[in-house]
Image (tube, rainbow, N blue to C red; front, top):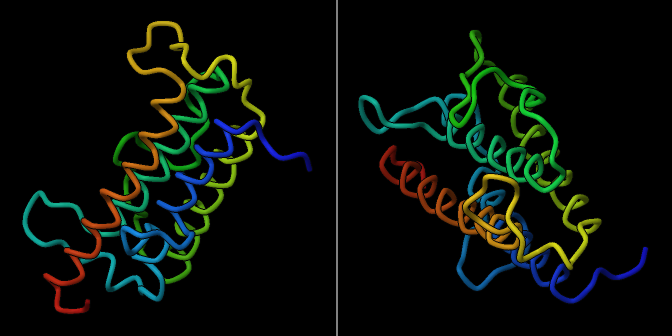
Length: 162
């Protein structure tokens, strides 16, 4: 496969460092959930506060939303019900948790593929009706991952497991 145009290559590097590659900022999103079990990720630090499982679904959703914006596809294809903060499964289990981790991984991979194929000449344009350029959206997904990786690390500490 040909190497992406330099601006796209840089955006991919930023996405990957935030998600699952070695990065100077510390724990990545993927690293923050490695080894966690369903009981760990269901715990909430307080009423109306999000637990780790919810954060994982939220980050998967926003990877999907950014990809949808980049490709111009319509809403409605995210595999889990709800948007922004998709609902947890009715019957949480280890297999359901593993499936949602796989969903996060898949959404990251699909976003990467979309960025690789994205026309670099369009990076500084906005989607119709959009506030942020395509470049800002891609960069924003990386910042979102880093933000929530830190949040997950804090939730683990509050629970006493990190």
